[in-house]
Image (cartoon, rainbow, N blue to C red; front, side, top):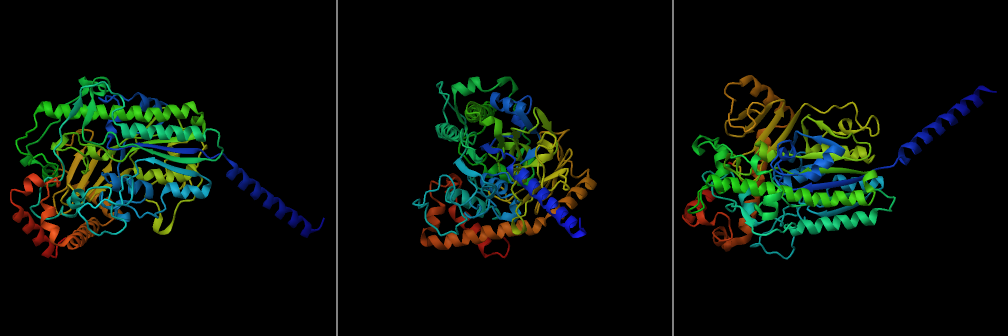
Length: 544
């Protein structure tokens, strides 16, 4: 046999081997992807000792991997979800607050999987771009002209809260005063919008039971997002009342100045004739936990359908929340702060090829979901301007080599970064969690440092006694981004948006600012000219 013939045969064999490998890889069954997500669930409630009773999530944990130290990339609905679906940090997307989301044509993770043969479907809550769920193109909302990325799904009052947050002295309430509503009935399906959404998710799963094409389904629910409202059924049956604790409150004067601003703007100060008693605080916390229990039941309906249709055998489930809820800790409700109750979120992944009943303690971020989905669906990572900021969790979840990472050489770091630039905070916040330490940098204010093992309630700021730790964590932060530049960019955008809105409404400006629909109305009407003057001084100032 000639040397030339031998070379040709080797070439043909090598070509056939490459083709065989390509066919095997691409013929491997791709799992369905099911995102089941809620809004405002404190991740610590999925840990042992939780007051909220979570039978369905506990079952999911037993079938999969629970990440017990997961953080929101930016603890508010639109910023967090924009980061999760884009795979990029808030400072990279510019989705600063609930009024600024992703462009409608942004290549989110779900869209990317279409190229890998996936059918895609959103049901329920999205809330990551300008025209998300709840958008009404006919809603006037007092008028005003905005770019396409500005959301009409959230109120003008919420937008103004974000745009005006750095006006010196304007610490007016930006939210409605919160109380607990417990309705005297045994209604189980109280949050009807979400129960209806769960029914839609179940119907979708039934239709897909005999379809061989893989799908990526997002089932999004609003519960347990405040207001704090439930029924006797969940108040009595969904909570272990013996585990409800009264949070320790420092004297507000002794609080960090940014946290005082947060407390003021969350309406702990201005509502006339109201002062929270211990009973009020416990009632709100009890009601919040009852809402979390109802959310568990809503999620359970979808998970039961997965079992009933047989799709459980080829579907990877991701359960997550966009952020937590303060639930009266540190004189606050809602989210919008980097403290644990607000920034910690649940994350559970379960399905074929996923380890069972495993708890992962490594620090993780919702940014990590994008690359994980890309690996599971065999979809190439985006590059260039869309390069991902998170890290695949496949090494943590996969049974042996059932799934593989596209970048096995890149290890998940031992720290996470979270940030906050929206309303109810008068300046940019950047958080670095590493080991026991949580470092929070406030632009223009003193930082905070907490040891979360020794002080899980974050009551003792030990930044003064640990300058070396502060220096190390700050160096880590600045190796990723320039905090001052990011803060300036966010505040500059706020001022530009407010100025554009003010010009667009013209003579209606003062009457809109004092309208009874504004959350700050009760404080505003006491001295409207003072507040208007502070805003004008800020507009005239070169500072953002």
